[in-house]
Length: 151
Image 1 (cartoon, helix red, strand yellow):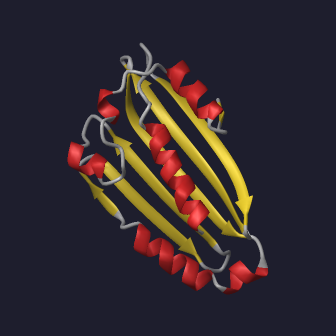
Image 2 (cartoon, rainbow, N blue to C red):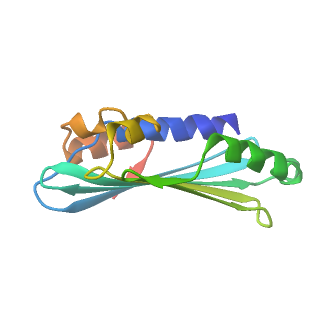
């Protein structure tokens, strides 16, 4: 559980190094991990336009994989609910979905950098993302060096 939250935090940090290409392109990076009865899949989709990243969508899918975690799913989901408040304003949207029957929890953060305010970005540790000048290839390399698979 704590590992899942740390990985979501790492995912947020990885997004700090983003900007883009001369034409609109999409870079999708993903990572899967399983530990202590929980599997987690992270997907980051970045859209680059006019040499600058303008949209980011981060999805974290968490699933209980052993009986102990499944039996304690209500506690795990409650903890996740406390960590993430649903929001949709200032170019930032956070949605979450707890599927208790299947013991899965999905958190999706979408950011439109053309509309997002610095305050809304700082809520998710994305301060300065609009000032970064990394290229798509540099971003891809950094994500792959951090364990993501990108296409």
